[in-house]
Image (tube, rainbow, N blue to C red; front, side):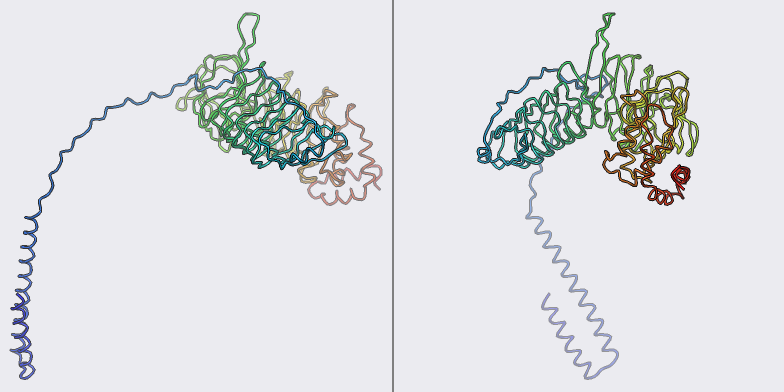
Length: 599
């Protein structure tokens, strides 16, 4: 092949030379034709050679034998049966126990010995407060006396981030502990002797090695996030008086269970146990269960639901005569829930179960078709009898008539106003009873709406000894109710005039007066005037005094002469302030000009 190509190239080269020496058309034609023929022949020879080489390689290659594939037969598994309600394992019921006092020796040391052991402290006239610790002891007992002075306080962050202490013993002389006193430390065991009453916020937060905590029998309050993040804390015994547990007290801890001292008290506030194995492993966590023997021989069973598990859609209500869902039992992960009853009689209560702030979407309840229990729910909760497909709405909200400016809310017989029950109110709202002569009870923070400015309570009621208007009612300035067929009118300055902090302190007056057994505690107004309330200054007191004088006085109220003298003393400043707000609140200047000391 290469010889022919070489001969062709030689002839081509020779012909080109002759062409240049004697060029004509016929010579050019033969050159082009010869070049095309030779190129075709050469390419055909190359293709034949390539095919021959490929066939030769294929004859030498022998592929390996193919193994036969054997298919394995997998047995068909039956699908897991769908979970049914009324599973007893889904309901956690705490055990009862008898609390025992811890016996911790009360050591008395000198100031020099305390310094040598690593304690920093501050002496008072009759007591000592521990402020820091720099020692290296693994087992530490807090001294009860230093220089014969009682050690009764541990400051905030005293043992924070301590890396040496493993076991801590706290004597009965300690009556006060500061916030975050033991947080982020390596403490594994902590034992309290009886004496401490309040465990502060974040006291043991993020103590990941904490395994055992012995709470004193005198403890009645556990602060916010006190044991948050204690991953190794599995079980807690709550003493008899410890019923006030703040939000997230055990959040993100390893808590799997708890026990309560007999006779049982309510362990309240479901938010304290959020994000724990206790919440994840159970659908219902019972905070208290009591059985009352009756004369008929039958026990009256009561159940207090502390917490509803995450993303629960079906709740099997335990058999009982009285059921109450505790404070913050439901969270914002619940959108609709079906309740199944063992029996169609009794009573069910949702008084503190919902937090209106966390519920950004409505909550729907679906009760069994034979539901006959009494029911009252907040406005963002809707109740139906039946299923989601076949349902009938249950009456559970007070009847309201009106618009954004003025409305009338009619309460059904047997209602009790509790946390955030009355919301979405108008500027002027009248609360009236369905039938005269019915006594209604109004609980703490029952009214919760920022639009409410004038509230008329046209019903017979008994209020709690705590404020019935929440801090969200910052536009409220006038409340009207009736006593002995007489109209009582009370004014307070709204938050636009005196600020939200001072307005919140004045809302405390709208409660049941424990001494006089009447609604509205005028002593709160007088305390604000006498500089007993922080955050209230001369400007605010001028408006408070004017509203106190404008209000209708009762015999049981404090003397109003004090308010009159206060305005007379600051009359020049008062007139300037009233003129400043006269465009929005002209009633202050009009009333001030009618006072006897104003020219």
